[in-house]
Image (cartoon, rainbow, N blue to C red; front, side, top):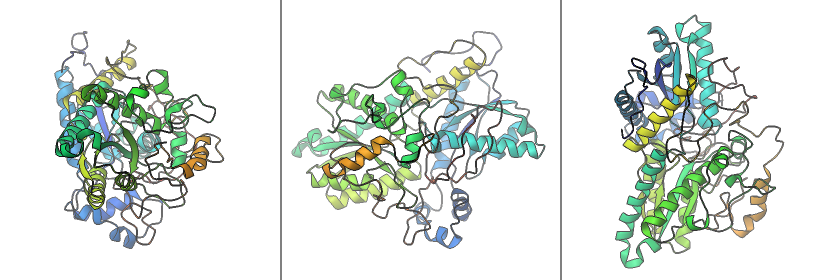
Length: 493
């Protein structure tokens, strides 16, 4: 660690008052026998029969029936624990999953058994949305409620949550270097065809329902780019390059919806790349792993549709940068390394996938900072964001943040209606004209990742959000009160 942030008070752990850090993730099967019960958990409440789950579980068979998320989260747990130890903390880091062992409830039970009374939860989702933040808080509240009903000591634990960390310098630096390396490598391969000028940088994140996008964000977030336009703002009608669009920061970050959060990251990375390469870097933001019924509008364009469109425009090569995911789990190793790579090959595109931030020391250092930042706040001490943080995001979730649907909404957000009106001009959800024009009422996935109940469906996203029955928020747990949640299926890790 480059910065020593140990508590100056002798004998006091820098994570005081917390007794443990709970790394909260999605979970995944370890072996073939785990796949069916895991998928039952992932689709709970949707009435999908086992016959369909068995039929659509082919993704995991490519990987021996196991999800890579388990090893990746174990690596992150070890790296985070070691980094916290360097800062003088003896607080353990444990894992609790939504949909497979060790479940959140199991982890809280073990912590309660060993005497833990206050725990700090760190989610493996860097961004704020219903599926990436609020639903995990619902899971934590539900587990605590069940443990209390059983008289388990774990039910007495107070749980606080670390803020989203997509604005942190370690996350941004690791993602930028990854994109830079992939671009440089592919540019060398395509040197006879124009090198970097023949490439497109395509940032990828997980698709979410349009309703969820409209409800995401901590304050009064609106559509993409969280602009000041009366219709809720939206990105320019031309492809972005950082020289024309300054990164957002401060209060702009605090107003950002899920899509706008990613655009902030895209702009920041692209601005740095332009300085490194001394030339404009054109980029797009696209989505993967859509699931749910075709009639439900989700964020688009789909990455595979977008690669096809780029090939038709004469682009020679594409680098996909999976900024929506912190490590190489199924949505990366299948959706990008298999499906997107196959699409690129079919279209004659040279293809590279940038690495995820994983356990890059700079990223881990930023995770350490946000955990220590939260602990200092809890002790009533001044807490300062890490130098270079674009935000930071509020450390305590607002009561109405990250809902599954905008409060009081009775129809699509204004910016979605605007996108529909512009569809004939080739403008997709993110506003990039190079994206495939498609009305948000269509699935836009060409058979990739639809609802598992639909005939001929592929598996649901390997990390689909399970339908979670709304439970009352638990007092003093860091889980904010919320309106009733609409059932949804989408994966966010």
